[in-house]
Amino acid sequence: MKRWNGWGNVATEYPVPPSALEYLTERLGPLDPRPDAAKETLLAAVSESRLPAHRLVDVSAGARLTHTRGQSLPDWADLRCGRVASFPDGVAFPETDEDVRDLLSYAQNAGAQVIPYGGGTSVVGHINPVKSDAPVLTLSLERMTRLLDLDETSRLATFQAGVVGPDLERQLKARGYTLGHFPQSFEYSTLGGWIATRSSGQQSYHYGRIESLFAGGTVETPRGRLEMKPVPASAAGPDVREMLLGSEGRLGVITQADVRVRRLPEAESFFGVFFPSWEQGREAVRAIVQNEMQVSMLRLSSPLETETTLILSGKSWVGLADRGLRTIGYGDTRCLMIFGVTGSRRSFHRTRREVAALCRKRGGLFVGAVVGHTWEKSRFLTPYLRNTLWEKGIAIDTLETALPWAQVHEASSAIPRAIVEAMAKHNEPVLAFAHLSHVYRDGASIYTTCLFRRTPDPDELLARWQNMKHNASLTIQRYGGTISHQHGVGTDHMPYLPAEKGPLGIDALRAVCTSFDPDGMMNPGKLV
Ligand SMILES: Cc1cc2nc3c(=O)[nH]c(=O)nc-3n(C[C@H](O)[C@H](O)[C@H](O)COP(=O)(O)OP(=O)(O)OC[C@H]3O[C@@H](n4cnc5c(N)ncnc54)[C@H](O)[C@@H]3O)c2cc1C
Image (cartoon, rainbow, N blue to C red; front, side, top):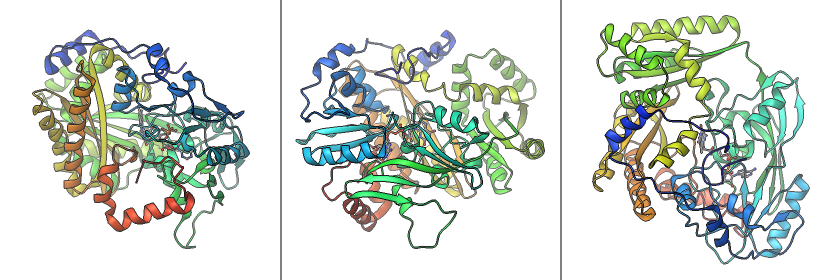
């Protein structure tokens, strides 16, 4: 069963060792965990539905509560502090494209707004109902999960868009294929959600971001059905498929998607390398991509992130590795790089050797598969840490950007610094650190995490969060980064979008929304 006010399955826990809690308390100060609001309190706050009856629409308080918020820090604060100000008036569960069509007509007749809902893993306010006089229908795709077709000649699979990561991969694996799209939210996020948010998987360096995996599909819009035939490439004017990527539910409901799949790899493994400094690690990462070595993923953690994540992992080998690194001359500073190799057996061994040699040349210590294996095993479990730490009195938030290599160096320290400076105004410490999470020949994405104490007053908590977010976002803008590399815009990044797209760009985006949805019924208040 899914947690109603946190991440993931209620049966899964991510325990934090006492030594890690001590480490965090030393840096953040004494913690003051308060109990969360009871589910009954929130259920009692759900007002009467304004929607007429429909066979596919559930207006129960339970369904409306569990679809009202995503996974952003403000979402957690709303749910856990019991102060949700807006609920959808009903949640629809279509099974077919015809059901979706029928529901859009029903919403049009009822003057309702429609929020397409995939897995609800948004971290930027995408799926939250905006307070309005119109009733709000959340349209969940959780019953639209089937593999409809697998064209093995073209290596194209057609899925209903509500399929979640593990289910999609299970259906493909049974036939010997994989999509290879593994966002950290893999367990719950959906194919339709990935497309609508321009998502990026952890191995996108090898498999490609969702933009290159999404080949075509079907969208039900307020003005009718849009079909996009999958073609390998096209010069037939601007690509309508591109308009759907990142559309955040504003244009319609993606009901089916054709995706480019591959044969399951013969070999795959993840490896660790320690660097004595950030600069050496960063230059090694840049050399790996610019020399076009065939890695499937690369991430490089800053010294503070390396220290914190190793302590939080609670693994027995961490102390051993620390002593080993000191023996060979490492000081307190070290940066952990994880790289993955995926592909044929022959290319696998060659790439692993090449990358290890390049890292050694640049001062890195290749430590083999133990660290990489630990990362692999916990890659979808780490989000559960948010539950554990919240219950101990610590909130976590993340933000991300991408910029050219020329800016990566300064921005990767300036963004965490902006967060620390914002909290200093509240006289509060914060642990803020970054890693390079996705790499490209011309640049990289910087993924920043901050850990800070919860306050008993949710308004104060949100004020602190807002100041950190704002200061970090202005810093991203100052370095010319994008306001989001993978999480999307939603409500939280909307104020920063005009600076990135320019007035003409924003006008064009608005015009696209209006042409698919003239009455503005699709997910209003998000994106633009
Ligand atoms: C712990 C955690 C880790 C994460 N890691 C990553 C990561 O590694 N990479 C990454 O890219 N993102 C990540 N995210 C963000 C999030 O998972 C992605 O944005 C994801 O693509 C959202 O998918 P979803 O199915 O949950 O969509 P939802 O959250 O349900 O919806 C997101 C937006 O898409 C729209 N939408 C959803 N389905 C459809 C549809 N069928 N048709 C039209 N519009 C639709 C919604 O209206 C909404 O605007 C993470 C989030 C969390 C909480």
